[in-house]
Length: 363
Image (cartoon, rainbow, N blue to C red; front, side, top):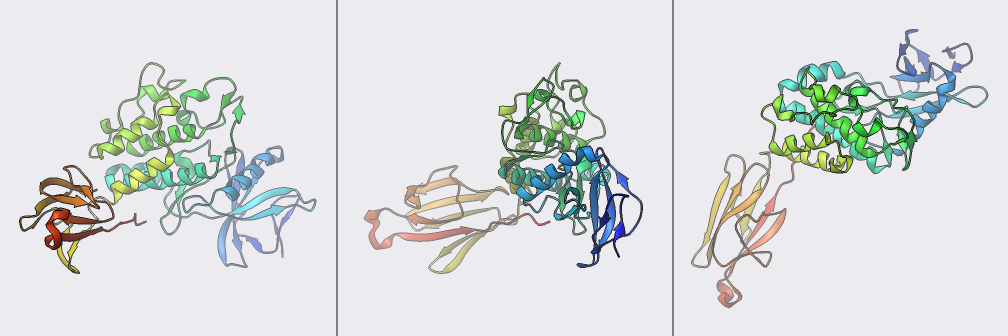
């Protein structure tokens, strides 16, 4: 038996309405339904006004271009008897909503960075596919049942270059300064600005006055995020502050944001192994952050682990890293060979291999 949704069409028999309650949004509305074929609850999304169906098609196209673990999935497209698109079936997110993120993540630097990492990764995947969200905000983020943060509501997203708008249809406090001009060109940098606003929204309940101006930051730059969230890594503070730069070209790219946040989340989790003649001679980790390797009279090398990288802090004698002369402040990357002694040392030269782990963000 089909499920009635409106006077003009019926959902396919595969979907059964769970409740007649419809949740309205800015332009569209969603209703919880049950997929009887896959035995799971999903959402049916449609436009409140059929004249806005172009936005629905726009959302379908955007979601089909951008595949990401951190972007809501579209499962099905619903058409009426005439073949016109009237709705979509999308993933039902049942985890934390924006209110919980807002109230909880500012208490924990780790959770804060983890939330920002997932938002940045969603933007990275979107922008790589040529899609600009245009309405990034905490309201459009929610976790799945397994705890994966996902971005949704792509109704006003844009795919491609040279798209211009005569009016801003996003949310004002998240709108970048360059949107407050006639015929504004929509760019990925606008999403990056909104990311910076998300960072502020997660950190505090109070907006700095400069961000509430129209256009924002007319009288001066907003203060640093460090003024409301202590204990963040300096690299993250700089990137968040740069996201809100009034000049779009000076904002970081989403890929850089995702990469740096991932690196900070892996802080202290690396292991570096030094091996000589197939036997481990030293291990560097958070619990053993420094080692000094001395090979007879050939040379010595001191390496420290600062939680992010393995760095040389002392060199004595003739030591080479992959045939390059070792020097203070050089980093040991991934896998390399340390050579103690010159070519003239002959068979007395010694070789030590180094390999480091690559911890990933665990969600």
